[in-house]
Length: 472
Ligand code: ATP
Image (cartoon, rainbow, N blue to C red; front, side):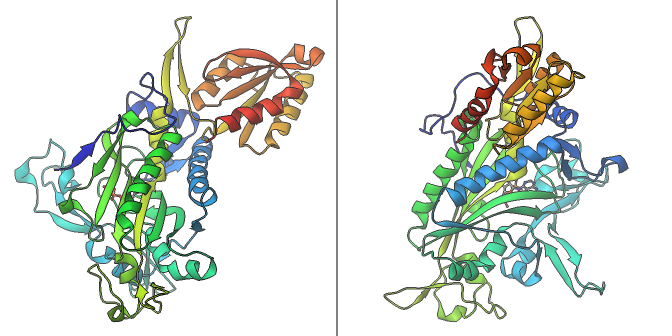
């Protein structure tokens, strides 16, 4: 049985307690995402292509901010991790050695009654057992022709995970940087899986992004590092605004482990459709480097790897004392960007009753994730003096390079505030007629809705402090 552990009582820092802020249903999130330009169904005007979504203007900012936050915590704030941005098209040899060609498949059944195909563990209730075919294995990798001849002899895969390109670049990175074990290589990028039943909005899609770290360690220290990375990753999600009470950790049972894994911990999140995996942290042992390495017979490899005749590199490190070549073990925290975006949207979504009996929807993003950091709004649309002042302030704030600032020229202040609550803009700054007289503006806080008067000259410093103080 799966072992679920709710770590409500464990001590992770900086988490706000309080009322349940998450969205009620996935439909509410999907509708908001479309209405405000976060996420659209891909190829929508031609009826849509299943399992694919496009990020609109605000979704792009949110996603970039989440990726930037991960990159900063992995690469910039540590001294033992380097970044990589490898090709998506991948040689079949790489994915043969990794085991993907043989094992990256899901068992699939067809329903003779409704004519649809399902993953064997995801058959809907309306299909009767007697209508189902025996399960067959279905490989999830996308193939594409490479080169001018389209006879199937020359093809590449669209990578199903970013990890394998990290392993095959292990020597390149090691030889070009000053690192020794333990050290890691981080990568963010697209991955492709021909999921049989893509569903639940951006939770399970066919083209998605991963944020993966491969952290190479000396054999024997792997179990300790596995714990360390599990704790670091939980804390990171909390720092992005994901509440502890909505996460659980799952120790994947031995009989469900992937072929390369000695132990895997999944960070599970209560998505609107249920508790599912947000990130997996696996102890991949020496499987991957061992499988991609040449000269396997002369190196001790613990895992059961495939014989390798084609690699021209030894993905090992020479022990300075014994002079023996040793294959590092690897700990892999692997998170889905899209699942992260969905969790953050769900966490941030609040529906509040206001004193005047009305309701407002707020996306209470942490400022570092907010797609728009501040909106500058002239009180009246066509007034040249107000518009020029607003444009100048927008430009000054934008130059601080804290993220996107927008000039909001709708002329309807109430509507603008509602919109910016709904897209999660932390600060709105209004230029009105008083501004022209006394150089002061109104600044409105998204979370408290408090409005205060402030000198125009003080706004840039206030803005910087506000965003930086709340940025982890
Ligand atoms: P699942 O069991 O939900 O199919 P998985 O165990 O196959 O996921 P991994 O291979 O561990 O997933 O991939 C690492 C991460 O990549 C996952 O934790 C998830 O966040 C993300 N991911 C995997 N498949 C998809 C997908 N089809 N759509 C969106 N994100 C995905």
